[in-house]
Length: 155
Image 1 (cartoon, rainbow, N blue to C red):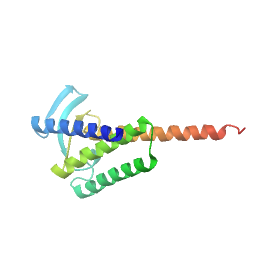
Image 2 (cartoon, rainbow, N blue to C red):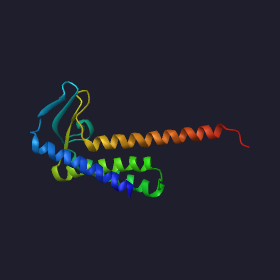
Image 3 (cartoon, rainbow, N blue to C red):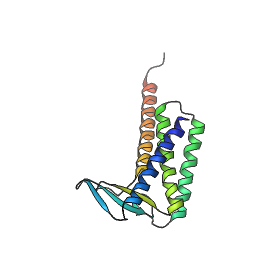
Image 4 (cartoon, rainbow, N blue to C red):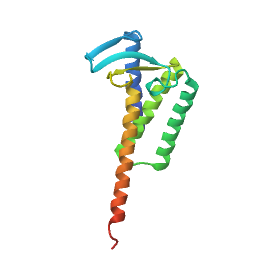
């Protein structure tokens, strides 16, 4: 249930911010929040991350569905009990669904967070990156604990 709540919060926040941007800005408009550092820039992204492979929507639809299926399958079989795992998988799941909704209904993903030194992105992208980052940190931590335990002498 916690996984679903996290995913749903990400989806709602992602879609609400994207709708707000689409209704209040024209594509290409940019509003400085912190001039030269953070801008809100409305971009219609027909590609993957960083605009790669533009106009290959079918591939991205398949990849999004696969990410969702793999995340749900892993979660189902691993049955994580700790909240951090649930949060990380919820972030990935919600982010994947958020961008999938855009691809299905608009044919493009709405991006708007612009740090000027990085390609423009959105809430769903952020959730996916943070979720995957947390999973990687948990895996590294787990591997480190196993190495430490393996080095300890048996009694």
